[in-house]
Image 1 (cartoon, rainbow, N blue to C red):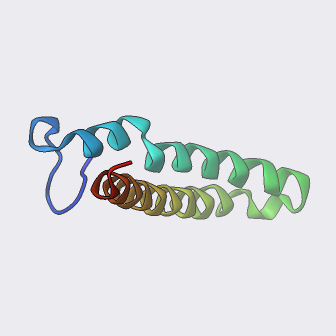
Image 2 (image 1 turned 180 degrees about the vertical axis):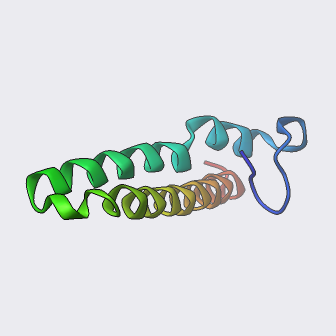
Length: 83
């Protein structure tokens, strides 16, 4: 659940970081990527079944981390603007 640089203790996070961490975007992206990585080779080429889940899982996790970081920036910007 690390948010930012070396911050993984919820007590050290601000309220925005805790809310976004609770959404578990990277973990959800990992699960979605693994699912796509399993279904895609089954529908197309079964030889990809060995590598596709790992590659899609890593890509999903990375996309989830980017989404998490973007969400934190968006919420902080909204707070700074007074919305």
